[in-house]
Length: 606
Image (cartoon, rainbow, N blue to C red; front, side, top):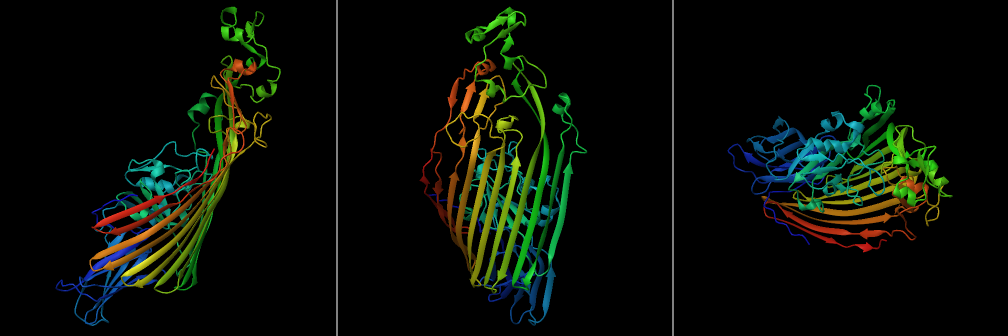
């Protein structure tokens, strides 16, 4: 159980914003009973608020967008504020001063609300819609936008892949916290890949959807209890929705190596510049199904990339594979003599006896095509690494009435990448694997207005992340106990590349979240209380070295068939795990912030 106290006047808006203010007359006296109508101009959705005894009104849990606000009181002119842009997480303050007159007379003021935060101590920044769409992004990765915020840094080793290494993604640290402490929200729902402790990302190592994103808030510190389990910062994103006007886009981005310089190592080893081609394309469309009632939005983004990779690694030399090793001073070394080595004066080499069954093992290694170092030599190889990914988003919004609104969103991504360098630095065929993924994120959100001072939001979210790491080449050898597994790993010292698969299998994680937020305004006080229940399932069926692993200290041990040891695993593998973290939070600005969390976990793993 966690209990935290806060003296900050804090009322966060998870995935939305809030408009509040005070209505007074020309003398500065506050006016109770003023009807304040807040209307989203693009969808026609409106909210009614009534000022209390202190002349204050408040409308929480509003969707981001463009608003018109009207303040009406019999005996006074109507005040109208147009052009108010509400961004994610903002608590906009819009005050009115009403003159004596007819209610049919309108005083119209056009202009945005001040972006300076005077109501919350939360440290955050907002990446606006224009920034999202206009700033150049390498591979159009949404996560990179967070780097515009002070205190947010990217881990330089952050683009990783593989079932054991985690989902490919750009890892970011916020305010010095560990990268796995960063939370990612989309439309108020957690989309963090909690089984791997990082943000969403597909086979391309990027989080797509720039054309589907409305805006993003990066929260670096002092956020409220409703954000739950995260101890680092937060990235809260809002997707686009349909409006009363049809809108859309078609886009195509291309990048290649035509203007790239050859890198240092390619020049050093005389390798031509590898080919590189990237294509990103797609379209979006949104609009009304029923004016002021029902809206839709749909997007597609495709990613196709061919990345040329030059890899330089060590393999046993041609002489070593024949059992010929250097004989300094015209004699075999003590190690080679112990392996049965005999000095060959005609070749000035120490001849080691080859193990009668070592042929298939040596056949895993190609001959060096670079510099020779005696028992090893450089093997230089350029290959094309293809990556494919398809990203879809569909969203439906419906206004049942001014009191009830609903939206549902489905986002899915599916891709694969055929790696040409293994996790541990080998470009040999039996060591290479293909990574495939499919991710599904869904959200359903229902808002109900009980009264001008009370509103409730229920939110359900579900996500599924599936990662598979499969061999590109099963290999010719069977050195393990698992049936139908790819060839195990052959590890040799002296810096020689490993020749076999180290990881194989799949990881499937599911997460279901149920949240309810209730906001109430009582005079000068805003009270918000809620509950968040999350159920996480991890089904991990990966096996490290499932095909076995022979380890040799030297090349001489390899050719004579003298491994240091064999390691491997025997069936069965790993069992799934379940972890349901539940939380209850209460928030009263300026008074008390309480959060309780309950964690239970069941499951076994071998």
